[in-house]
Length: 266
Image (cartoon, helix red, strand yellow):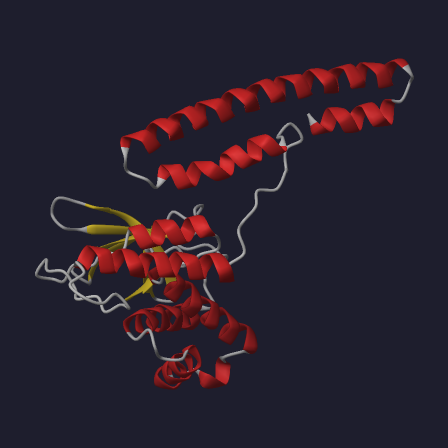
């Protein structure tokens, strides 16, 4: 009886060459596990890793061939998160040798294990910023306090008896200016036909106002949000009305193929 982790991070039980998923735990601390195949009635009762009872018989499609690979994936994901600096190749090779399954592993199995390791590390690492708005939100969330709630001594180019807050503003400004020079500003594409360029410009202003905490910026953000919503709704209604008129005209001229294409867009 062994416990492994599924692709979605759920706990699974392996017993006698079959996989079981969690059902429920009773008040007496008895856990019910059912076969991972939905149509299979087999289930087992377990308490503190001790098998109590087995019910039902497995079907022909319930046997699993890649149990060893799933065990390896669970161990590799755990070690990849614990030691974030270790290379995935080294982790995978060490676990394959430890399990003694090197002769049965294929290139497809190695590729699956590598993807599991990268996926596990990606969940515990912050994402890279893609635009200026991401930089502003990330910098504003930086915590400059120690574990004892004391301010760090920030060393910058500021000289004299400048306050810590002023030094932090200098660092923040330098980060933002560097990001504006090196990162490409993300632009909204006109994916919807009723969206105009003026509406796109108003939408790009919203994240900058939303990140500010003063009351005036909050009022400006609400006003801009309501304005864009009203304009988008009005523009969409006009576009639908224009498209319906165009469909009627094409049907009158017996252009059915063009009418169907316009109708599909709606």
